[in-house]
Length: 129
Image (cartoon, rainbow, N blue to C red; front, top):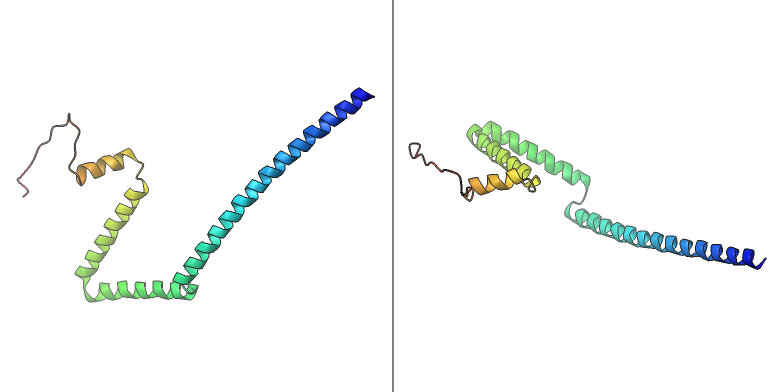
């Protein structure tokens, strides 16, 4: 009987310890989720201050579309320049999005910093200048 009682006590202590550990894990998760929720609420408030309503966003987009259409109609050359700049911006944004890519780093080093590998042969062509 004493052995059975001892086994019952040991199992009860084990179950209790396991329950306490699981409770602590759940409390930690609750704290993390609460912190994330507070961060999201702060972000929502910040965005709400920047943009009063979705109607304002829609109006801004509408005004931008009207501006682009007006630009195309009044000065096609300027519109082409704006579209070219926007295409370059999109290209740069795409390159920045893949900044962990080795080819991206090499491309930036070659094009903007004029860096090359030590074993590469560099040939300068001044005919196009």
